[in-house]
Length: 199
Image 1: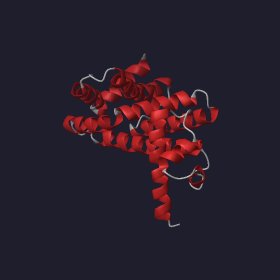
Image 2: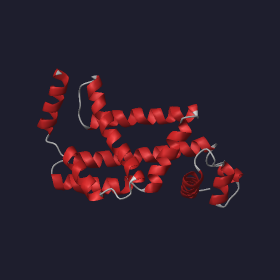
Image 3: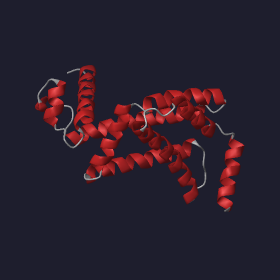
Image 4: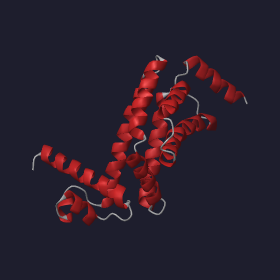
């Protein structure tokens, strides 16, 4: 089998798994369910992924790739408020899709009783936080430095929950507020960090 065909099959399996995870949940989805959605036998799927956990890990890996791209795009857009707002709109329009938020919740719920998956999620979280710290050029290593990173991540994660609970939330207003918070001159940000460290 050629590399392109193998990659195509992997993509098809991941898409089938996505549909199953969203409709049935991670825990209730078995390889047989994914195989049915994929249109081939479970044995065929094992040629590409050794287990359901391996498929979930691939889903997480792809989510991390999106996270890296989006966080870099937001950081690079800070030369003007307009560019920041444009990137915030683009990122949030994808991030706040109901299926994506539901999948994230399913993933966290599954990890709460699957130690192997919990470890994968924790490792991904460490990579994400480290990436953001390097991206924002925060040189300190105090609890407050890391708390700022966690607060930023919590804002995005929390927005997903708010849109799930309140689909009438004003998307444009949220984007504007978030863009205002992200677009902050570097000197002002450094001053804020100095003030936090002196407290």
